Amino acid sequence: MMTSSRPAERRTEMLAAGAAAVTVVLWASAFVSIRSAGDAYSPGALALGRLLSGAVVLGVICAVRRAGLPPRSAWRGIAVSGVLWFGFYMVVLNWGEQQVDAGTAALVVNIGPILIALLGARLLGDAMPPRLLAGMAVSFAGAVAVGLSMSGEGGSSVLGVALCLLAAFGYAGGVVAQKPALGRASALQVTTFGCVVGAVVCLPFAGQLAHEAADAPVSATLNMVYLGVFPTALAFTTWAYALARTTASRMGATTYAVPALVVLMSWLALGEVPGALTLAGGALCLAGVAVSRSKPRTPRVPRVPRTREAGAVRAAGAGEAGVPEPGPDQEVSPRTG
Image (cartoon, rainbow, N blue to C red; front, side):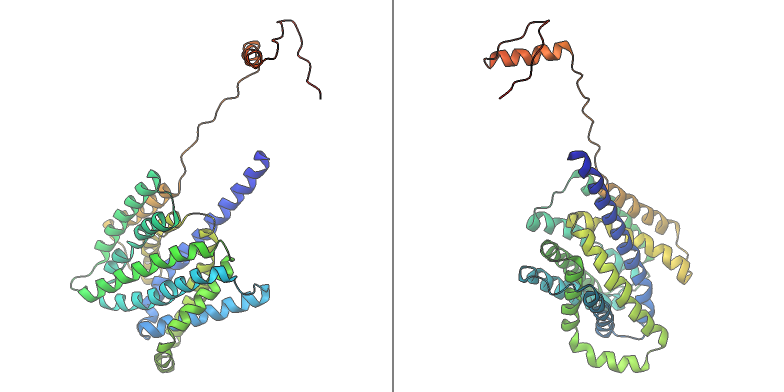
C-alpha cells in the first residue's frame, strides 16, 4: 500500500507545481498588460472589464463540464475571497499604480505573501518550517532590490503607498478565506463564483466602463480581455488547484517569482533593459522561492538483516512474554490457530 501510494503522491505534487508555475507566469504577464490598458481605462472600469471577461469564460467552462453550484458550506469562503481579492484588490491595486511608480507598487504589494503566512498560521494552523521562513526572507530581499531599482524619482505618494498596502491586505485575506472553501468545492467552482462576486462588487463602475470602452483603442480593450481570460480565468483556476493541494503559506511564497518574471517580460516585450540591481533582485526572488518550496531530505533507515543475533533478541523478547525460547538448532514452527 505504501509503495503504490508514492507514485500517486508524486504525480499530485508535480501537477500542483505545474499549476503554480502557470499561475505565476500569467500573473507576471498581467503587469505588462495593465500598463497598456491602464492608459485608456480607469481603475474600476479596468477591474470590471477584466472580471466580466473572466466570468464569461469560466461560466462557459462550468456549463460544458456541468460543474453546478458549490455546496452551501463553501459559499462563505467564496464570497469573502470574491470581495477581498477579485473585487477590492484589483480596483485598489489599479488605483495605487496610478499614484506610484511600478517599483514602489511591487515592493509594497509583495508584503502580501508574508501576511498570508502569518494569517495562515493564525487562522488555518499552517506550519511555518524554517525553510519556508528562510525562503520568504530571501525572496523579500530580492523584491526590495527589484522595487528600489525600478522606482522613479518623485513618483511616489502617501495615497499610492496606502492603496498598495490595502491591496496587499486584500490579497492576503482573500487567499486565506479561499483555502477552506477549496476543501468543500472544486477549484473551478471556487474561481468561477469568486470571479462573479468580484464582478458584482465592481458593478458601480459599469457606467465608466461603457463610456471608456467607446473611446479606448482596440489594443487597450484587447489587453483588458486578455487580463480576464488568462491572468484571471485560467491563472486563478490553476492557483486554486495548487492551493487545494498545499498550504496557503507555501503558495504565497511561490508568488515571489512574479517580480523576476516581470523584469524578464518587460525586457522582452517593452524593451526595458534591467540594471544589475534589478537582475540581482530577480535572482534572489527565484532562489527564495526554490528554498521555500524545497523539502528536507529524510534519512533512509537501513533495513536490518535477519541474523542469528537478531533472532536471538526476538526470541528473548518472546521468552519474557511467556513463550518458550527455542534452542539454537531448533526450528521455529509457525503458530496456528
